[in-house]
Image 1 (cartoon, helix red, strand yellow):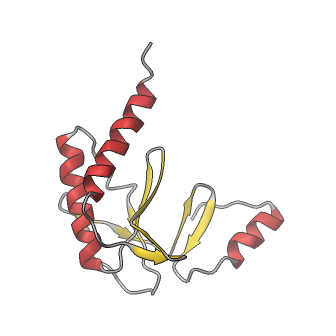
Image 2 (image 1 turned 90 degrees about the horizontal axis):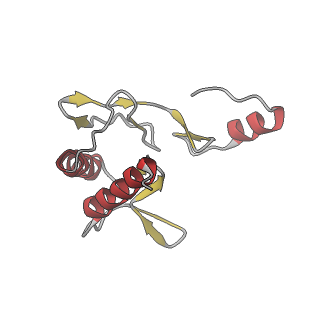
Length: 129
């Protein structure tokens, strides 16, 4: 028996390992260097500069395409933690920059403030970012 979803996730993990292989970038959080967060086919790429992020996005687009995985440009967003405008291009399209987004049910904001998330959880009201 073959589970298609499991195979796609396995391929996705393999692609991400290849993309991140040898990368020295990322951000330091709690004494550890993080380059990405992954859950199933959701990913957050972490970089300290626009140039570093563009290189990772280029590599992900190239390797993913070689393996038959395509990135949905309409669903792909970028966010900075300093409010600075960022110009990241994927497959000839500029990725939309947002000030908030939801990842695995939690609201992430560009000011790294969690008070909005706490209020949403306390009131039980969830909204799309």
